[in-house]
Length: 589
Image (tube, rainbow, N blue to C red; front, side):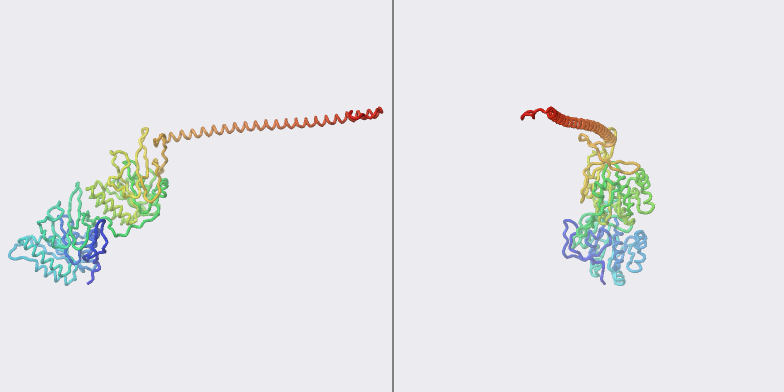
């Protein structure tokens, strides 16, 4: 019978620096998020895998989830229980929503094989009878997968290690002969153990084709579970230890995105930050699907900026989720309303979902899984986490950075625009620095908020440290909060000092007064010049009239003189004529 869930290796590496063999065993997917990525497709198909872990590490859940996934993909399975009864196992797994009752009627069989408490061992004891019964069941239902849960319970009944080794090899040969994908679970020594002790059934590690180690530790009072693939014959795999959680649907192993996966789609679409002038400084806003980090000390308005982004997203009709580690959702809504950010109406219409992460307990991995689950349920396109630096305080700080990396990687893969705030230590120096998680290098846009104390005032400043793929302002702006909203204003530089608040207002007021005085003086001077010009024009006009009169007078004088001379000359001539005098001699007048 064909097994659709069998996967062949692709030949591509899993992670950086890792080389996959060109040929390898077929894989049987487990359906466990992360584990299939670590193993390159699942457990070895038709071979045996050993699963070792301490109490509470999740061995039974992993084994049962492996069978359930196979049952849903035409690979019937058998679960042989040596410790708990099948009834109790089914009842315990009811919360995962696997519908075991339906699978038991078709493709999943539970067998109780617990030794009775009053069992008295006499004579030789082996597993041949159990194997014979299992073979009949296997052929009857066409089983492809089988789990032996807590096999060490039965092995402890055997008299010595030689007998234990003999029966294990008998079981292993039967599994190989029938081409069953087997999974054997065994206990480790203690909670603190990262695996079974070398002396305790150590030969099983050499016999099986794949060995998976589970451990359950308490770090700084926080429970943490980890998984490591110790060996995998014929296939490359992720050898590092990876944290995992037991969530609402079973195990989920935390692994980073592996090589060979399709890159997340990118776009040049912009989304508003909720502050108009900040959008201008960013060249149009954040990129869709980008990761934005807002860092600052307490009280620098990190939550306010993230709230403005959430409001702008809801105004666009985009489903948004706001996760607060510091306050309840109702408190966040009330506080943001004081600066003109109204989120209550969007909560009522279902566009915005407020989550108080103070109700989530556990490790950083627990936070990540819960946030991802809630975001998927809400179908969020925009996500706000305030502050993401809380992850570094949840148990192991070394794993918190990995959690933050996978949070950003997941948001990009989903196309979700992520805005995270990060709280800086108020006791540290107020120099611009990275976040406690050191994720500032991963963020696409990094906005830093700080204080400037001058003249007895504490004012807020904002600057964009980086914004990948876009030109952005390098100027420091003063962030002003009022009941009408969030605004940014230019700072004032005087003598190399940056002035904000009252000092900026006083300097700007003095400049306005000085400009007004200069403008009035300019107007008065213009009036005086206009008057002088008018006076000069009048004087010029008067002189022109006087000049014209003199010119007329001069012309009249010339004309009168000429007329007079003509009259005198004519009179003398007439008198000579009347007197009969001689004609005038030449040359005399």
